[in-house]
Length: 126
Image (cartoon, rainbow, N blue to C red; front, side, top):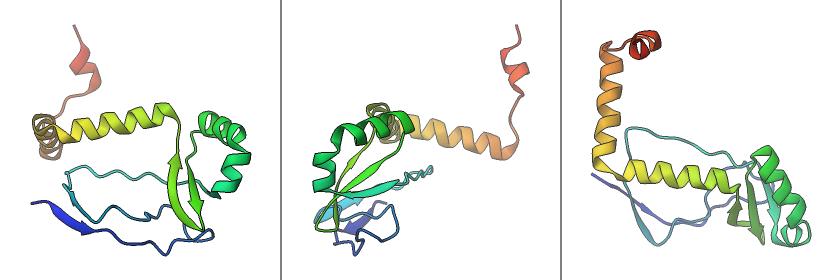
């Protein structure tokens, strides 16, 4: 059963803890899979700083794999992350959206829990 979440304004401001969400729309249906991952936000910067320092910020995001939350009037409005990380997130979403793939992941986790595993050496021996 999907979890329904009503969008809200986040009290997250410039000096608030990182990783907040400003809103997720008026009404969003979120399917909670068996696997949950988190993505930490490294830095909040105002849009004026983002405009004046874009090349430096882009370089840091690419080299350090950091994420930057861009704020307007202290409210998070966008996230800048590397293209490689973006593609990874898209791939993860696609995998979790595929019911057959999700079923295979759950079955694999059940096998691990039940102890139905082999060592890497056994799995790849000729």
